[in-house]
Structures are given as C-alpha cells and as structure tokens.
View 1 (cartoon, helix red, strand yellow):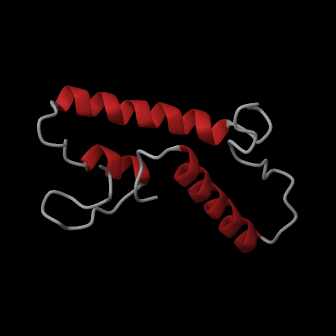
View 2 (cartoon, rainbow, N blue to C red):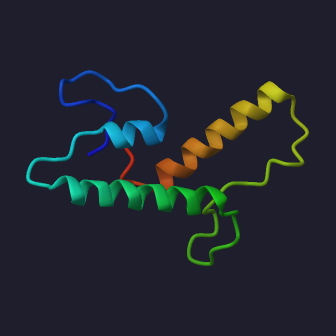
Length: 99
C-alpha cells in the first residue's frame, strides 16, 4: 500500500510522514478513508516510538531503547538510533512498506 512509489511510478522523497501523506489513495477508497488510515498510522508510530522494551507483556521487545545514556560516539549513536527506529517500524507497523 505505501511502498514509496507514486502513481506515476516515481519514488517519492521526503520524511516518512510526508511520503504517507503524498501517497495516492488505493482505487475504490475515498480520500476520507485514506486520511483516516494515514492518521491511524501516525498515531500508532507515535505510541510505538515512545514505548520502551519490557513495557508490553504481549510484545516484550516493542519500542525503542533509551538512548539518553548512550556512550557511543555521536556518529555511531546516530547510526544505531536510525537502525533501531527502522527495525521497530518494520517489525511492529506492517502498513508502512518503505522505512
């Protein structure tokens, strides 16, 4: 559904939320329904990325580690955070195809 390719076949660029908002609504689905789905994904991502592993008994690895006390260098930390966010979204938000 949201694979990052626009209706013209060209890959969209921009932030994750910008790509979600720019994606064309699937055939047969009204724009209101599409907007509702995008808003649902946004709300879920906010909750997901603010959760921490261990907070959910049904999914103990849901969420992101706390990176506030990280001891890695700035560049290494940036790479680690980016990877953790990507992995978390890919695992727990299947409606997003291109992270």
